[in-house]
Length: 173
Image (cartoon, rainbow, N blue to C red; front, side, top):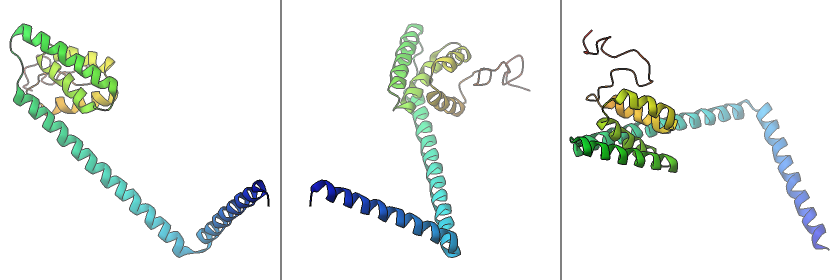
């Protein structure tokens, strides 16, 4: 026999076998109620496992963010004006570099957070971040800002005009 005929016959047998299995599976799915129930049960188990995995991943992410914010607070921030300026520029550059890589969003957001902590008008900087920082990093940064009660933004994170403490920003309603 020629090799091409043998290959064609083998491919034909494999395709025929796959089609026969698909027809058998479809027939079984349509006629056997127990089989349908087991398929539904397996789909529900899979969906539940995926949901639990996502919840665990979200909790781990929140813990990593909380730990990063706590570590940044413990390291402290510069107090001298020139040191603040240099620190700000370094952190923004670091955040932009990490965002460009795309794989280290928490570290990038942490760098932006550190720059935000030393910036004199954090609300203005957030509106700049809103336009320039990728959405993934911005969401992580929003969680970091929400965890830091000492950061006074005087407004919402989304850049809205309403303030947290009323029109005079004193924090008392």
